[in-house]
Image (cartoon, rainbow, N blue to C red; front, side, top):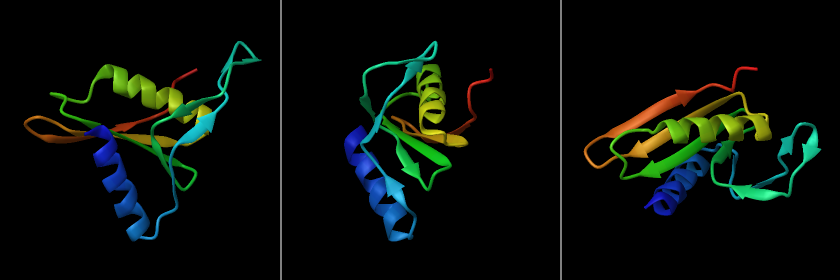
Length: 100
């Protein structure tokens, strides 16, 4: 379901004329050292907003928030949104960058 909902969000953003990137390849760094490149799943809207789409969780999880914070760091986006199409309710959580 995550992939289907992410695809629907991508279509909606593009329909509204927003620049949307997906299947981003990033090169993370740890202690100043580059790690192997890897794909990440959030949509990047413009250059400032990351959007992660989840499905069927009871609520937005702490793991999803931490993952989004990591994605904000590697993409240099300023703010993130985690969207959860939950079992019983729809939930959106805003996420800021990791504090250093």
